[in-house]
Length: 371
Image (cartoon, rainbow, N blue to C red; front, side, top):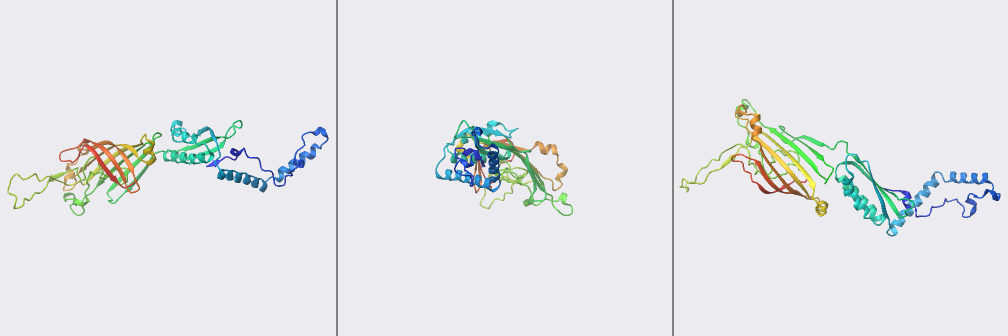
């Protein structure tokens, strides 16, 4: 951050080291009194030449040192005359003003103004819509001593869309996602899609069963936003609570003699082919206390599905049927970021589920690794 040198205009100019204290160094102003005009002009020109180079730099350093010494000794009163915003062609002035102007105008001393400008700079950078932010303090109008103008210069991001593609622990899985920041309430839209497929190896693999640990399972409380490789996440559904099932094998003990024993339930088999997707809109909450703590709100939509391909089931696979049987959920929530983990308190509403799916509309707590 730069403070313009002329913002200290109330200080007396520092004379050149070799300038005489008397009248010898002054330019005559009354040529009619017989003073030689040509000689006076030559003396003034020589003075300017002597102040070139190191002498000028030394004088400027002395002025700057005097400014910092004054700031260190006691608070220096100042009033912000105007705040000028430049460089924003797509971002509205109101957004920048909401983050910076009131804070800057509240400063009553130079020291407070420097701190306020630093905080405002950090706030504008946290919006993630600017490549750079510069805040400069300059002198106010000459007729208003003790005032300053504040110039906020921003460089907007040429392309606000960011994305990443990766291949993770399973070579047959991929995850692609992107984020689009908006110019209001620190809002951003995160979207992503993941897919994976696994088939058994060896001769006749299309007719063989796949390994259960290698299959894909959907459901759980982990946030799809936090990390790449989020193929399993499907908010509102229980862990491993989606997909093909079979009746759980039930072997009654010798002590069980009643034929009305409870139902054995279902085993979730997972899938050889899986697809999941999400969209998450995050935004600041209206209370300043929440914003300062990083607590924010979000609205989300998640969807996903599984299918079996092994044991010759690929012959029965249909993309239209696969799309029709997608499970989905939507909701809103509050995100509490911490250094150790990210906590989400979400209200999940199940949009689509099928028989034997384990899902529930209601409040859900999510704990994930921090972003």
